[in-house]
Image (tube, rainbow, N blue to C red; front, side, top):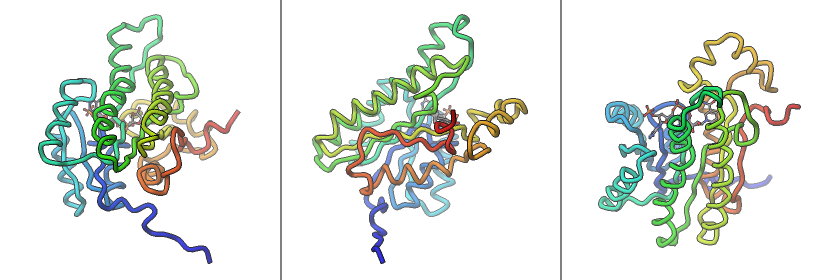
Length: 259
Ligand code: NDP
Protein backbone atom coordinates (compact mmCIF):
# COMPACT_ATOMS: atom_id res chain seq x y z
CA UNK A 1 0.00 0.00 0.00
CA UNK A 2 1.46 3.41 -0.88
CA UNK A 3 1.71 5.54 2.22
CA UNK A 4 -0.22 8.78 2.38
CA UNK A 5 1.09 11.73 4.32
CA UNK A 6 -1.64 13.71 6.06
CA UNK A 7 0.89 16.49 6.63
CA UNK A 8 1.51 17.11 2.92
CA UNK A 9 -1.53 19.40 2.66
CA UNK A 10 -1.52 20.58 6.27
CA UNK A 11 -1.30 24.36 6.67
CA UNK A 12 -0.87 24.42 10.44
CA UNK A 13 1.49 27.22 11.49
CA UNK A 14 1.07 29.14 8.20
CA UNK A 15 -0.63 32.52 7.84
CA UNK A 16 -2.57 33.26 4.65
CA UNK A 17 -3.74 36.65 3.38
CA UNK A 18 -6.62 36.39 0.92
CA UNK A 19 -7.71 39.57 -0.83
CA UNK A 20 -11.39 40.18 -1.54
CA UNK A 21 -12.46 37.42 0.83
CA UNK A 22 -15.68 38.71 2.39
CA UNK A 23 -17.76 36.70 -0.08
CA UNK A 24 -17.69 34.42 -3.11
CA UNK A 25 -14.55 32.56 -4.10
CA UNK A 26 -12.31 34.43 -1.64
CA UNK A 27 -14.58 33.54 1.27
CA UNK A 28 -14.53 29.86 0.23
CA UNK A 29 -10.73 30.01 0.12
CA UNK A 30 -10.65 31.58 3.58
CA UNK A 31 -12.82 28.86 5.10
CA UNK A 32 -10.97 26.08 3.24
CA UNK A 33 -7.46 27.21 4.16
CA UNK A 34 -8.48 27.80 7.78
CA UNK A 35 -10.00 24.30 7.91
CA UNK A 36 -6.66 23.00 6.59
CA UNK A 37 -4.97 24.59 9.61
CA UNK A 38 -3.90 28.06 8.47
CA UNK A 39 -4.48 31.30 10.29
CA UNK A 40 -6.34 33.35 7.67
CA UNK A 41 -6.37 37.11 7.20
CA UNK A 42 -9.54 38.14 5.42
CA UNK A 43 -9.58 41.35 3.40
CA UNK A 44 -12.26 43.67 2.10
CA UNK A 45 -13.00 47.35 1.55
CA UNK A 46 -16.15 47.49 3.62
CA UNK A 47 -15.62 47.22 7.39
CA UNK A 48 -19.11 45.93 8.22
CA UNK A 49 -18.92 43.19 5.55
CA UNK A 50 -15.40 42.28 6.68
CA UNK A 51 -16.43 42.05 10.35
CA UNK A 52 -19.40 39.87 9.41
CA UNK A 53 -17.23 37.47 7.37
CA UNK A 54 -14.61 37.25 10.14
CA UNK A 55 -17.37 36.70 12.72
CA UNK A 56 -18.92 33.90 10.67
CA UNK A 57 -15.66 31.94 10.35
CA UNK A 58 -14.48 32.53 13.90
CA UNK A 59 -17.93 31.30 15.00
CA UNK A 60 -17.02 28.03 13.24
CA UNK A 61 -13.94 27.80 15.47
CA UNK A 62 -11.53 28.87 12.72
CA UNK A 63 -8.49 31.10 13.22
CA UNK A 64 -9.23 34.29 11.26
CA UNK A 65 -8.72 38.02 11.45
CA UNK A 66 -9.65 40.96 9.25
CA UNK A 67 -7.45 43.47 7.42
CA UNK A 68 -9.36 46.29 5.75
CA UNK A 69 -7.80 47.84 2.65
CA UNK A 70 -8.54 48.61 -0.97
CA UNK A 71 -6.30 46.54 -3.26
CA UNK A 72 -6.37 49.34 -5.83
CA UNK A 73 -4.81 51.83 -3.40
CA UNK A 74 -1.02 51.56 -3.02
CA UNK A 75 -0.86 53.63 0.18
CA UNK A 76 -3.65 51.55 1.75
CA UNK A 77 -1.76 48.34 0.90
CA UNK A 78 1.54 49.50 2.39
CA UNK A 79 -0.35 50.78 5.45
CA UNK A 80 -2.05 47.40 5.90
CA UNK A 81 1.25 45.50 5.72
CA UNK A 82 2.71 47.95 8.24
CA UNK A 83 -0.15 47.06 10.61
CA UNK A 84 0.73 43.37 10.20
CA UNK A 85 4.42 44.17 10.84
CA UNK A 86 3.48 46.04 14.02
CA UNK A 87 1.67 42.93 15.28
CA UNK A 88 4.46 40.57 14.14
CA UNK A 89 2.12 38.78 11.77
CA UNK A 90 3.97 37.31 8.79
CA UNK A 91 2.27 36.40 5.52
CA UNK A 92 3.37 32.93 4.38
CA UNK A 93 0.64 32.52 1.75
CA UNK A 94 -0.91 35.26 -0.36
CA UNK A 95 -3.95 34.72 -2.56
CA UNK A 96 -4.53 37.63 -4.92
CA UNK A 97 -8.26 37.04 -5.35
CA UNK A 98 -9.98 40.46 -5.34
CA UNK A 99 -11.39 41.25 -8.74
CA UNK A 100 -14.10 43.13 -10.59
CA UNK A 101 -15.87 42.71 -13.90
CA UNK A 102 -17.20 45.45 -16.16
CA UNK A 103 -19.05 44.77 -19.40
CA UNK A 104 -19.10 47.24 -22.28
CA UNK A 105 -18.25 47.09 -25.99
CA UNK A 106 -14.70 48.40 -26.45
CA UNK A 107 -15.75 51.23 -28.76
CA UNK A 108 -17.89 52.65 -25.92
CA UNK A 109 -15.38 51.97 -23.14
CA UNK A 110 -14.08 54.95 -21.14
CA UNK A 111 -10.44 55.07 -20.08
CA UNK A 112 -11.47 55.39 -16.42
CA UNK A 113 -13.36 52.06 -16.60
CA UNK A 114 -10.44 50.37 -18.39
CA UNK A 115 -8.07 51.60 -15.67
CA UNK A 116 -10.38 50.61 -12.81
CA UNK A 117 -10.53 47.01 -14.06
CA UNK A 118 -6.78 46.84 -14.78
CA UNK A 119 -5.94 48.34 -11.38
CA UNK A 120 -8.11 45.92 -9.43
CA UNK A 121 -7.41 42.72 -11.37
CA UNK A 122 -3.76 43.15 -12.37
CA UNK A 123 -1.90 46.07 -10.76
CA UNK A 124 -3.25 45.08 -7.33
CA UNK A 125 -1.65 41.63 -7.63
CA UNK A 126 1.69 43.33 -8.34
CA UNK A 127 1.30 45.77 -5.43
CA UNK A 128 0.08 43.28 -2.81
CA UNK A 129 2.49 40.64 -4.13
CA UNK A 130 5.39 43.09 -3.91
CA UNK A 131 4.61 43.93 -0.27
CA UNK A 132 4.30 40.25 0.62
CA UNK A 133 7.53 39.33 -1.19
CA UNK A 134 9.42 42.21 0.39
CA UNK A 135 8.85 40.35 3.65
CA UNK A 136 8.92 36.70 2.50
CA UNK A 137 12.29 36.95 0.75
CA UNK A 138 14.37 38.32 3.65
CA UNK A 139 12.63 36.03 6.17
CA UNK A 140 14.07 33.09 4.25
CA UNK A 141 11.26 30.69 5.10
CA UNK A 142 9.78 30.50 1.61
CA UNK A 143 6.20 31.25 0.77
CA UNK A 144 3.32 30.81 -1.65
CA UNK A 145 1.60 33.30 -3.94
CA UNK A 146 -1.57 32.31 -5.78
CA UNK A 147 -3.06 34.61 -8.40
CA UNK A 148 -6.70 34.08 -9.34
CA UNK A 149 -6.74 34.09 -13.11
CA UNK A 150 -9.64 33.17 -15.41
CA UNK A 151 -10.61 31.40 -18.62
CA UNK A 152 -10.01 34.88 -20.05
CA UNK A 153 -6.32 34.43 -19.23
CA UNK A 154 -6.49 32.21 -22.36
CA UNK A 155 -9.57 33.22 -24.36
CA UNK A 156 -11.52 36.38 -25.17
CA UNK A 157 -15.23 37.13 -25.09
CA UNK A 158 -17.32 40.07 -26.23
CA UNK A 159 -17.60 43.15 -23.99
CA UNK A 160 -14.96 42.21 -21.39
CA UNK A 161 -11.75 43.57 -22.95
CA UNK A 162 -10.22 45.14 -19.81
CA UNK A 163 -10.95 42.02 -17.75
CA UNK A 164 -9.44 39.82 -20.47
CA UNK A 165 -6.36 42.04 -20.76
CA UNK A 166 -5.96 42.05 -16.98
CA UNK A 167 -6.37 38.29 -16.53
CA UNK A 168 -4.06 37.58 -19.48
CA UNK A 169 -1.53 39.92 -17.88
CA UNK A 170 -2.03 38.22 -14.52
CA UNK A 171 -1.02 34.89 -16.06
CA UNK A 172 2.29 36.42 -17.20
CA UNK A 173 2.76 38.31 -13.91
CA UNK A 174 2.44 34.89 -12.25
CA UNK A 175 5.34 33.64 -14.35
CA UNK A 176 7.40 36.78 -13.61
CA UNK A 177 6.88 36.28 -9.88
CA UNK A 178 7.76 32.60 -10.26
CA UNK A 179 11.03 33.48 -11.99
CA UNK A 180 12.09 36.25 -9.60
CA UNK A 181 10.97 34.72 -6.32
CA UNK A 182 11.46 31.00 -7.04
CA UNK A 183 15.15 31.14 -6.07
CA UNK A 184 13.97 32.30 -2.62
CA UNK A 185 11.71 29.25 -2.23
CA UNK A 186 8.59 31.30 -2.92
CA UNK A 187 6.34 29.49 -5.42
CA UNK A 188 3.85 31.53 -7.44
CA UNK A 189 1.05 29.84 -9.31
CA UNK A 190 -2.42 30.68 -10.58
CA UNK A 191 -5.88 29.18 -10.44
CA UNK A 192 -8.13 29.76 -13.44
CA UNK A 193 -11.76 29.23 -12.45
CA UNK A 194 -14.39 28.45 -15.05
CA UNK A 195 -17.83 30.03 -14.67
CA UNK A 196 -18.52 29.97 -10.93
CA UNK A 197 -21.85 30.83 -9.29
CA UNK A 198 -21.04 34.01 -7.31
CA UNK A 199 -22.34 37.57 -6.97
CA UNK A 200 -20.02 38.61 -9.81
CA UNK A 201 -22.11 36.49 -12.18
CA UNK A 202 -25.55 37.12 -10.66
CA UNK A 203 -26.94 38.81 -13.79
CA UNK A 204 -25.58 36.01 -16.01
CA UNK A 205 -27.00 33.23 -13.82
CA UNK A 206 -30.38 34.96 -13.94
CA UNK A 207 -30.21 35.28 -17.74
CA UNK A 208 -31.76 32.03 -19.10
CA UNK A 209 -29.88 32.35 -22.42
CA UNK A 210 -26.48 32.78 -20.75
CA UNK A 211 -27.24 30.08 -18.18
CA UNK A 212 -28.11 27.63 -20.97
CA UNK A 213 -24.91 28.55 -22.84
CA UNK A 214 -22.78 27.83 -19.75
CA UNK A 215 -24.48 24.47 -19.22
CA UNK A 216 -24.15 23.52 -22.91
CA UNK A 217 -20.54 24.66 -23.35
CA UNK A 218 -18.55 22.79 -20.73
CA UNK A 219 -18.20 19.05 -20.10
CA UNK A 220 -19.46 19.42 -16.51
CA UNK A 221 -22.70 20.89 -17.94
CA UNK A 222 -23.15 23.20 -14.94
CA UNK A 223 -21.79 26.24 -13.16
CA UNK A 224 -18.98 25.61 -10.69
CA UNK A 225 -19.32 26.33 -6.98
CA UNK A 226 -16.73 28.41 -5.06
CA UNK A 227 -15.96 25.41 -2.79
CA UNK A 228 -14.81 23.43 -5.83
CA UNK A 229 -11.76 25.72 -6.15
CA UNK A 230 -10.57 25.08 -2.60
CA UNK A 231 -8.68 21.84 -3.28
CA UNK A 232 -6.42 23.55 -5.82
CA UNK A 233 -5.86 26.45 -3.40
CA UNK A 234 -4.84 24.12 -0.56
CA UNK A 235 -2.52 22.21 -2.89
CA UNK A 236 -0.84 25.42 -4.10
CA UNK A 237 -0.61 26.74 -0.50
CA UNK A 238 0.96 23.60 0.92
CA UNK A 239 4.21 21.68 0.86
CA UNK A 240 2.57 19.36 -1.69
CA UNK A 241 3.35 21.98 -4.37
CA UNK A 242 6.91 22.90 -3.37
CA UNK A 243 8.26 22.01 -6.83
CA UNK A 244 5.33 23.57 -8.73
CA UNK A 245 6.06 27.12 -9.87
CA UNK A 246 4.68 29.39 -12.58
CA UNK A 247 1.72 27.16 -13.43
CA UNK A 248 -1.95 27.97 -13.88
CA UNK A 249 -4.38 25.25 -12.79
CA UNK A 250 -7.71 25.63 -14.58
CA UNK A 251 -10.61 24.46 -12.45
CA UNK A 252 -13.27 24.81 -15.11
CA UNK A 253 -15.21 21.57 -15.46
CA UNK A 254 -13.13 20.84 -18.56
CA UNK A 255 -14.13 23.98 -20.46
CA UNK A 256 -10.69 24.69 -21.97
CA UNK A 257 -10.54 21.15 -23.34
CA UNK A 258 -13.52 21.72 -25.65
CA UNK A 259 -13.16 22.82 -29.27
P1 NDP B 1 -17.29 38.52 -6.14
O1 NDP B 1 -17.71 39.73 -6.86
O2 NDP B 1 -18.32 37.60 -5.57
O3 NDP B 1 -16.24 38.87 -4.98
C1 NDP B 1 -15.17 39.72 -5.26
C2 NDP B 1 -14.56 40.15 -3.96
O4 NDP B 1 -13.48 41.06 -4.25
C3 NDP B 1 -15.53 40.88 -3.08
O5 NDP B 1 -15.33 40.47 -1.75
C4 NDP B 1 -15.15 42.34 -3.28
O6 NDP B 1 -15.45 43.14 -2.16
C5 NDP B 1 -13.65 42.21 -3.44
N1 NDP B 1 -13.05 43.39 -4.05
C6 NDP B 1 -13.36 43.96 -5.23
N2 NDP B 1 -12.61 45.06 -5.41
C7 NDP B 1 -11.82 45.17 -4.30
C8 NDP B 1 -10.84 46.10 -3.90
N3 NDP B 1 -10.52 47.14 -4.68
N4 NDP B 1 -10.22 45.92 -2.72
C9 NDP B 1 -10.54 44.88 -1.92
N5 NDP B 1 -11.47 43.96 -2.25
C10 NDP B 1 -12.11 44.13 -3.43
O7 NDP B 1 -16.36 37.73 -7.18
P2 NDP B 1 -15.89 36.21 -7.26
O8 NDP B 1 -15.81 35.61 -5.93
O9 NDP B 1 -16.68 35.56 -8.32
O10 NDP B 1 -14.42 36.44 -7.86
C11 NDP B 1 -13.23 36.28 -7.11
C12 NDP B 1 -12.06 36.25 -8.08
O11 NDP B 1 -12.23 35.16 -8.99
C13 NDP B 1 -11.93 37.50 -8.95
O12 NDP B 1 -10.58 37.81 -9.17
C14 NDP B 1 -12.57 37.06 -10.26
O13 NDP B 1 -12.10 37.81 -11.35
C15 NDP B 1 -12.11 35.62 -10.31
N6 NDP B 1 -12.88 34.79 -11.20
C16 NDP B 1 -14.22 34.59 -10.97
C17 NDP B 1 -14.94 33.79 -11.81
C18 NDP B 1 -16.39 33.51 -11.61
O14 NDP B 1 -16.99 32.88 -12.50
N7 NDP B 1 -17.01 33.94 -10.53
C19 NDP B 1 -14.32 33.16 -12.99
C20 NDP B 1 -12.92 33.44 -13.13
C21 NDP B 1 -12.25 34.23 -12.26
P3 NDP B 1 -16.37 44.48 -2.29
O15 NDP B 1 -17.62 44.11 -1.58
O16 NDP B 1 -15.54 45.51 -1.58
O17 NDP B 1 -16.58 44.79 -3.73
